[in-house]
Image (cartoon, rainbow, N blue to C red):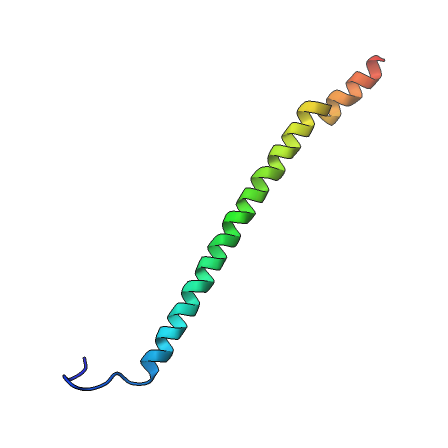
Length: 67
């Protein structure tokens, strides 16, 4: 605790800056994680759609053999 009338040490400004940078880093990392999860969901949806449209590889072989 500081006694009344005393100023905070100069390092408190540095600590404030460090905390702000850490907060920004955490926000950027959370944005990255969200974007990565959304990309993975889209990639999975694309694979599923391609399988529905073109059939799974085993279904394609079976269809080709029937021709």
